[in-house]
Length: 397
Ligand SMILES: Cc1ncc(COP(=O)(O)O)c(C=O)c1O
Image (cartoon, rainbow, N blue to C red; front, side):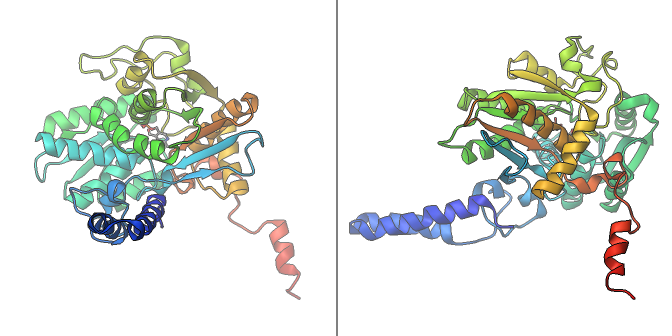
């Protein structure tokens, strides 16, 4: 994949070379070496991550996390707005959670909370576990994941394929059930619990990467709305606080499932002293947006609201999430999951009534490949349809 930053850097380098031809002799050296540095591909190193170098040759898979493309919507967007999506499926394991996984593991290595060879454990609906499985495989940590047995089978298999152990908890015990199991296992065995829902390193990594990528992609351009959902709230807190500081005119729109509109309910989340949930949230009901809105408001999400980082709340109906995930695939060629469809539905709601020239950016958290065994693919047949049989029959005697 040719990354946009690379193209931009090559453009910058060519401009520098042109500049250097016009300058006096002393300035030539500095200008030429800066241009050469920009043009010369070289290995990244652990200390110089890919999102800073823009290189396409990496010393580890971990260097490829982040730096996802922002893509214009051409067919599904109303003509009077500029609607863009940031496609997190371009991360190496296909979701926004690759960022969190790298962020929390490297922060724990730096602080000494994670020792070499120590087992890592987390409660996850899948994408965090898959991202952690990649990071742990690349760095040599064993990984145990606790996960409700209602989440898609592909997710379990992917984690096991990447070398992780997956311990299933009954769906009836909801997200709090997988979390309690992870805490119990961590305490009993002395394992490192990544605490994705409260870990500041999750939001910090989004401030350092996702937010900076957005600032760079919209530098000198309008950005009127940034639209996201929330699971842990790492994306929301990490990106929104940077936008509030750097692009105060950008309105932060937060989407949640209509069946589980926890933020809109206004009901307070009960917490333990460490910020983790003390009980499930009363406004939660099961919803099809896997990865969004667990049965509690995570601390990072609660922080974003308490800090005044959110401007508007939208509730999204389950069928709209599925509908727009399919529409993105079939009308834009953008293959993403259910929460991506949901966030996109939210962006379209804003776009409908926005003034002409409004620019919006919606986060698309993961790849559609993660949902082959879910209702998203329920209408996709495995056998030939009548239409396909007719195509075959047109050349078969
Ligand atoms: C599919 C999907 N969408 C959205 C999100 C939300 O991301 P975050 O945890 O940063 O709030 C997640 C993660 O929970 C996810 O797995």
